[in-house]
Image 1 (tube, helix red, strand yellow):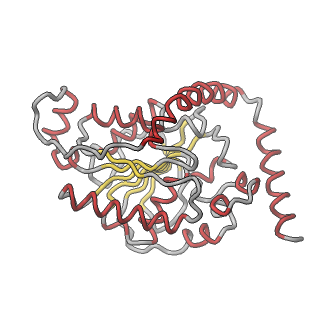
Image 2: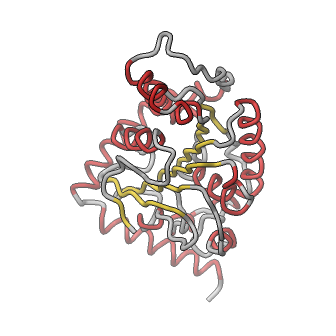
Image 3: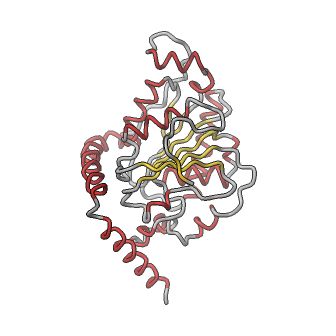
Length: 288
């Protein structure tokens, strides 16, 4: 059977999978929440097209800070000062992280940045190289030897590639991914776009990420949803690699686009980033 016939069959299998689960109560609830967040995000999206001013220098003093901010700064000045880089998904921009930026600031994190790339991007590898240069520049400017990266959807895959394949574990302490196709997604077979082809389960990129990654030091936290419409099947958003330090966290009833906005997810992420040890506290139920 030819490759295009395989693609069509895989896409049809994905559609059949979605049709079987479409009427489940959890899926219907997730779809309603997703629609609400999508409406809000569409209203905010144009703001992301005008760019964003650079993040202000880290401010590690107590003046004008709320109790939660003072608490983090007093209890762990290194955690409070570790820069955080937010990477959006395909056909998106930094506005998807509006709620998360606000929550991180309230928690006391003093240096939050965004990484953007064009929807016309053709290759995860080259974009990961550019992310690496930006991370190195942030570390040099801040004086921090490490950074955290939070990536939604493709943004998480770009971050993982940088960490796992380009030596980025020397700079990235924690890499958090939200609805990222770590094992590819059958839904990608619906589009022939070169970038989308890279997130098919049988792509060269997926094969490369499955290769050994000895001594990778970065802590990975992968959030995945049981009603994610774009990761088919949803379990493919988990990290399954014997060499990676990874926790997979299942969230219930949250659509793909809603993950960066979801209060529980945001709370769990900020809780994890307040601890720079190897553990992953405050994450709730995890899966293998």
